[in-house]
Image (tube, rainbow, N blue to C red; front, side):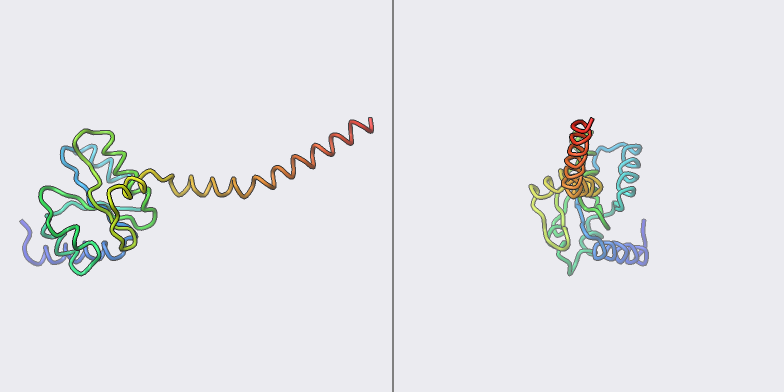
Amino acid sequence: MLNRAEKTKLVSDLREKMNSASAVFLTNLVGLSSNDAVELRKQIREVGGSISVSRNTLFRLASEGSAAEKAFKDLKGPHAVAFASDDAAAVAKCLKKAGENSENLVSLKAGFLEGKLLSPEELITLANLPSKDQMLATLLATFNAPIGAFARVLNAIKEQKEETES
């Protein structure tokens, strides 16, 4: 049982995480085995996020005065909150993947991206986005495509001239 000072510290830590995160996701981890929960936490940590499990009252107190306040107002049952510091899509993808791997658990209930409340459809869309690395690779390939085509044309011209000269 936490004493009042520990609860106050926990609420301030949660509030700080909510305010500093680029995205916040409300989810549940009901039925997730301890090994799966550890694996989910590890995956979220690897993509620059974190996940916290606490009492709904503490989540509600931590969200007071923020954009997330209305989502945390009437929580019932066990919940967890995932915080994304950099790549929000990667954290959402980890949560979605965990939900696909196990029945009746880990669902994205609400989310906030840079202070804006996301609908469930927007959460799924965000989770389905390619990772940041995949997006950068696609952008780089798009930039390199014209240069590569130009190089191939120059090489074909060179080979054609060599064939006609020989």
